[in-house]
Length: 171
Image (cartoon, rainbow, N blue to C red; front, side, top):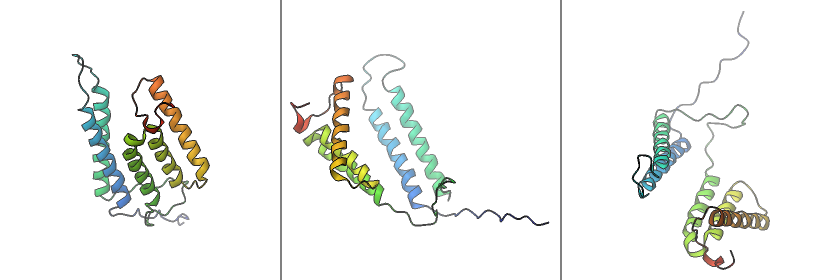
């Protein structure tokens, strides 16, 4: 009696550029977090200071990025979930990640001269646009509202000093 089910297809091997970009991005994020952690002043003379938790998170992120990079360089690939209807061998569409990254970079550059709310709203808008939202007025309004609420919560609720920029005096 023969087995009616066909054998599972062999997983594709070889270097996956999107997986490598994600792995290197996680590694870079861990390195930047580690750099930022060492910029935190000690402030107090104690064993557990303000650097402990950021140090744990940055080292964990750095180790995860190194592990993902090693797996990717060995030819391992991120497999889509069973319910996803994707072709893992198809070329990657990097348009949406590029839009998100461009929005974050532009928002970061505009954060200081324009303020937290416009810069952050631009970041929110770019994410919505990258995911296919084309109602520009609604998206811009929601992005400004969420950025404004975030600004108020962070400055008044948590006592953080965020740049008000062009909205100084209004918020």
